[in-house]
Length: 121
Image (cartoon, rainbow, N blue to C red):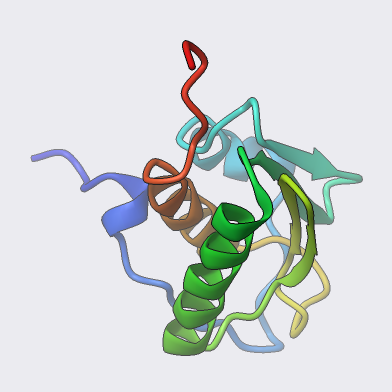
């Protein structure tokens, strides 16, 4: 039986005893998030930039990401501007990446599906 999609997996809390993931440990997770949005920076954090057709969609997306962050108690840094939302995320408790960061990114990608501008419009 295969594992559920990353966005459907649990966000598991870590402890200060846990180590950040190494690149070979997060490679499979990285493959399940949008490569046109997310970049791993210095093997330390995820940075993603989502494009929007207008400010309202960017604002509504930001609100939904905020609700997700509160529900999971895993809070990214979010920058909102006209037509763009940039997100930085890592597990602060261990100052690095854990599976939960990738689960959150996958869930944000899923939220974005409702807002992604139509290329044909």
